[in-house]
Length: 102
Image 1 (cartoon, rainbow, N blue to C red):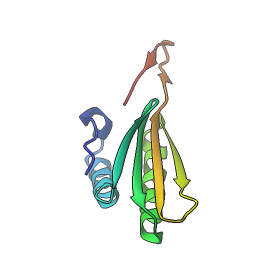
Image 2 (image 1 turned 45 degrees about the vertical axis):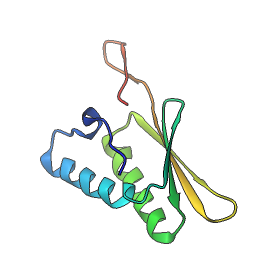
Image 3 (image 1 turned 60 degrees about the vertical axis):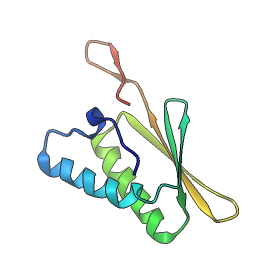
């Protein structure tokens, strides 16, 4: 499984942290390849309905709890794999300073 930075995994609510851990362990154990991309990582998965559902659940959760992250899912035209691109976007604090999270 891919190891994410600790600061990315931390959430103030222990129940949310547990939910994130469950979602990530259920999905990222299927990673076949990891590539570094601009501002993030791309994860290759075997294509299938179960993996697609797990990717969707992960994106929905992180979309709510990690607004600094953006996601792109790319389906291989041959139908054999899915790529999940996870990118960091710069968040602007109320003071106007940019912060990096990934």
